[in-house]
Length: 333
Image (cartoon, rainbow, N blue to C red; front, top):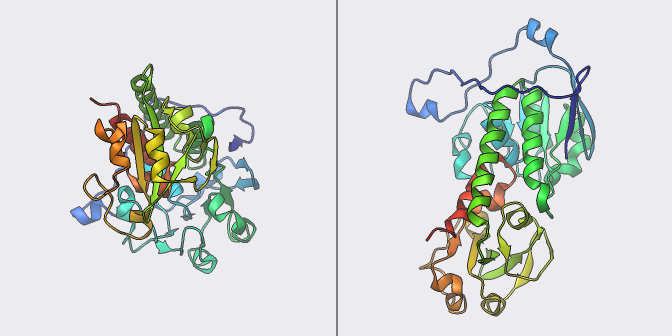
């Protein structure tokens, strides 16, 4: 979990209202393009209280309100988008549909691949803040020489019960850094409401579910101790698989395994569609007779999940809301 504090303060004070962005948009295209951030006056920086963010890779001190932000993970891009914070650099290899407006934004430098950022391109943006996750952690020291760098301490291998709390805490941290505390708290409240909705729906329901990743005709299952563990531990979904440790890429399983587990619900994440940019699987294109014998298939409870939200991100505000929507779909009669 990311620790944060302002010098001289013990806790983050939060209000209930939030500010709406007031950028004028002349065309529909302009409305979909992130607007550049206005320059900060010397007076603003003079009154800015330095912030220290403690994270797994170290301690990062923010001396002034960041103006040129680079986000090297799509989760971080989504956090900034939720807080109306422009950025000057990001990887553009796998941008989910809900962040599509950033794809061709000319003012945003392409910084290479998510898992292998181009450090020279990052340097060229002249950033004053860099945001990373564990996928870019091996570049932390190098990036920290360019600008203050913050590591988002999300565990992609084992989300367990604290996954949602980690997301909320990071959102509040960013809200503090960018003086967007009210908006951050509003987003946290909306996320809490969404989680509560899912738990209310799954509460006392007997159905058991499998989370399955599809990759070129092969399948992997994700249990309670995996990157999707929060679906079981925090959202109240009952697991159909006895598998406990599955980690980052899941436990390879056969169609026979899925048939024998005979889950009431199957969530299918189509990695192939994302990574190879192929048409997404659906009930018509998944010609697997063994899966069609499961209770999930026969009762219409096979959910072809939003693979971009589940696989590319899954640790940000928008992606978590989309995942919860997919979870809820399986319980709708």
